[in-house]
Image 1 (spheres, one colour):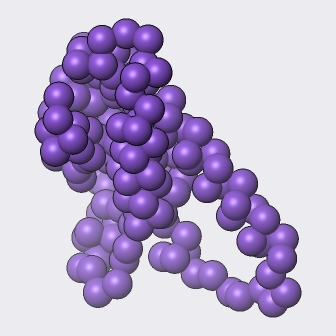
Image 2 (image 1 turned 180 degrees about the vertical axis):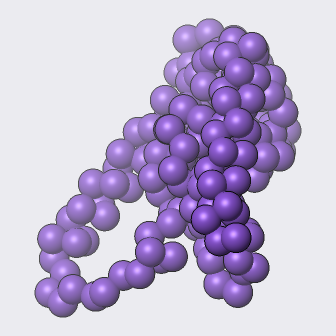
Length: 170
């Protein structure tokens, strides 16, 4: 697998996965890029066939997790050095940019944030980053049927959350 194919195959699902761990979307993209660099430079250390999508997806997830942990530690150090405390509104805390979005899109994003972690992961990876179910399964080291089940449960939960909000307004 060449570098371009490598990045094109895993970019979307990896950003979605990192965002589901709690990194803001822009930071998740940067962490994913760092993960690609680290993984590509050290691909020889992958003990299995790195051309096997399932094996390499697991290994890449481990590299990304280490990069995310490094990022999270650095965020903690930055917060510890911060002298002033700024008021942060709910929109800024979400993992998505929210400027100038229609109300229904904001409600959907808030509902996604309320999903359990395992459902939120697959939703972000599959729908927002337009990643195939097979690629999501490979990156999360899960059977395809498990990913499909989580997507089904997430859609069901989102439908219930959004129906409740709609009923409350009318």
